[in-house]
Length: 590
Image (cartoon, rainbow, N blue to C red):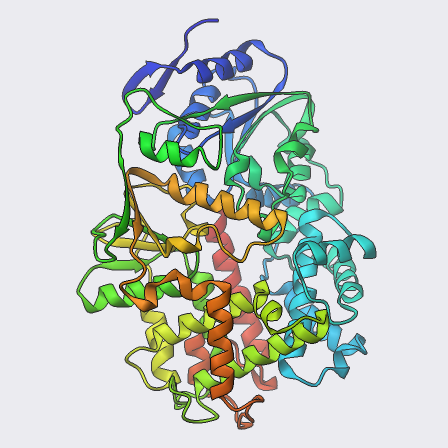
């Protein structure tokens, strides 16, 4: 086997024995290749160099998971025969090839499903409580999405999906979701993002213009069934693919990734599996720790020893350091603490949580008191906890379980985390209106090019693909989550540990928890959550308070970025939403 060389930037070095095997298989083999790439294995550099070995008359596609990776790869591959794209962009181009006029509306299924359910579900119309009706609609929306991810359309299959993702069905959500899917399949005047991948599959569209001799697949472990089938549609008779991934870094099953993604890709073609186990990122001590979660990782020759530090003070991080946590509320508490101490920090990648927090406040007027001491029945915090109590009671009744089991349910823990986040954000403000403004301020992110001297705070899920010299784990007792019970949940938590620890290039630091009660992960352990919720239930009046039947001020709706649903503004709002979605979509494809 010849010795290959790796180019990176203006430097050239001999390829490792593992990279050599990959390059030799590409040049001299006949099979498709599955690459098990550990964290920090220089997989991008390896793939870019692999592309250079392919003849220029071969048509090559590189499918990346997001636009940031597309930009990175585009800047490194300067070959006219290579197309770098995301799954959504590829699906979009296939739709255009088949004469579809693509008008993007992110709310396509949400709006239709809400109206369809209200008109056709007898069960839904029997639900009197607002939170039950919201839960029912949320189930329908989730089933519509998961069915498209998995390409499953039978009642039994969709019901199995609901069980897999722990959806608590209240009635006929499966039937409603299937009816919405049938409508969505034939409604092509507007599409949402998932339709860009689903439509080429469900309509079996021609892909003649977008068939390739070689296809490189990044983050293979996180592909959905629909994405895999989209890739397969781009095969020619003798197409070979290179799928790069790591089962130990699969953390996106909850949002559609198939838990057997790499195994399923192996079935698409005759494949050979090769390893990239050398981590050029992580120091030796971090690699030794990571081996407890994945055997496919070894330290590079010449790697520094690095350091693993325990009981590190929460004030230790400085500019450009990375702080990770399993839950969101402690990150918010830490950000506020840093702000009060004039330490520069920013919460990154948490736009979804910002939207969730704002959504939780939509039923309250600007002058509603926060009331963290539970002195009134209509304050924000008493109302939020009363909603939590209702959800707990619903789970107790649905599953015939006691308080402890109901409170330990994943949906309750998530809701509790969100309420704790709201409570942390309410420090220093007394009304909901002031809280909304503070949320928008706290979650304002830096521009892509402004990486200034800021400490980056984020959840472990959001840290995938990132690295930093110094990584800090906030509330280390939450990794792995003590709430994980099923085999799949335990595997997912081990993967999160692996991802979190392998972000470190020099030091991995586990932060002290006992010094600050608000930053102690123990309060998110089952026994502490159970005790806290029981205590609050004893302090707060039982039952959801009556909210004044008064329309939320239009100014407030605009601040929350929520459309006014009054009859007089429906047309204008639809036009605004479509325009906004179109702008997002154009940016998404660039």
